[in-house]
Image (tube, rainbow, N blue to C red; front, side, top):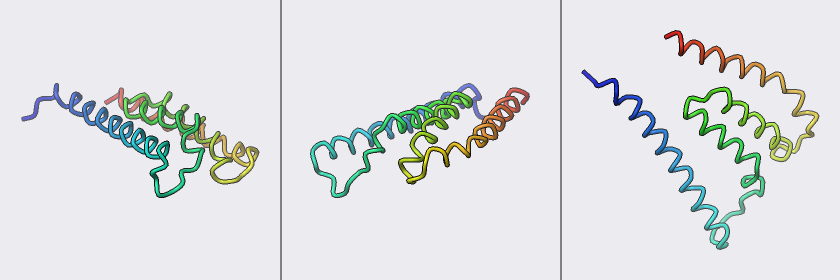
Length: 116
């Protein structure tokens, strides 16, 4: 039989390891970019505040903070979409009901987890 007390600890260790790998890779790529050692160009929006929000949202999701994670990711995605996909902000804002759908799903999943 497995020890249930170590399962959450193992899960958290895996999540922390994933966050650490992301930070290390990002730092390595930034260092290579600053030293002009990358054989390709990285778009400037990759290192923007919008991406920081998306990453923070991802970290929160990995830490089982569904609603704050989804909100941060949504703000980041809706803010960066016009730049990445060359569409107007007006076109992106037409999709705001997606936020309601995603938040509803998040609340449903969070409550379902509490019931079980």
